[in-house]
Structures are given as C-alpha cells and as structure tokens.
Length: 119
Image 1 (tube, one colour):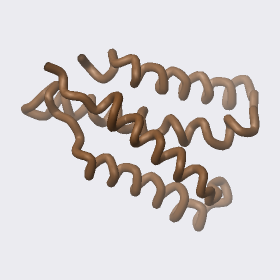
Image 2: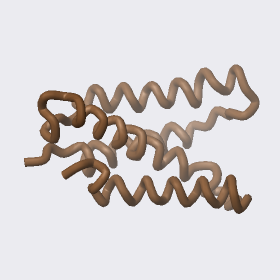
Image 3: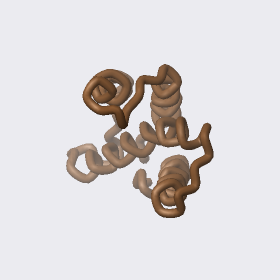
Image 4: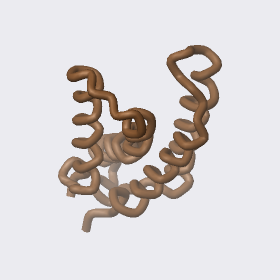
C-alpha cells in the first residue's frame, strides 16, 4: 500500500490541512489546538511524505521502511530546529517542552502505524 493510501497517514494529513485552513484562512484559533496540534501531526505527515518519496526512488520500493534510528534522527532534528535554533533567531518561534513531547508522540505513531512494509 502506498503511504498516501494508508488511513493512518491520511487522517493526520487531513487534520493538519483542516487545522491550517481554519487558522490561516478562517482565522479560527482554539488555544490548546493552536499551540500543539500541528506539532503532534508534524512527524507522521513529514515522515510519511518522505517515506513515500523514498519508496518511489529506492530499489526496495514498498518494502522500504525507515529504521528506528532514522525516525529518531527526524525527531531530534525537528526538536533541535524548532525548539532550539529557530527561537534564538526569530520571535515567531518559542521554546516549549510540550512541543518536543508532541514530536515524540508523532514519531512513535509513525513508527508503529505508518512505517510498515507492504507485502
């Protein structure tokens, strides 16, 4: 199954899109959701899209999966970039421990529900 057909990918991707639409187009801001929802959905969406691109170009095709180390690197990269570096350079970004927790939950979700070989 393509990642783009996996309901465990489609649901977070759709929720992410709806949330962005409500925030940016309709200007609807629900405080808790505005603060953490995108962070919770980021890893399944970004890693899911990346996994699908790899499956298109890698010789293993649908049998290609990320290793736990690769998923952890993605999690660390997002945490370091968005919670470490960017807040130092821009007031748009703020450090928040709970964002890192959301990235971790999203990475675990991706690891167990999306990152599967297709037989």
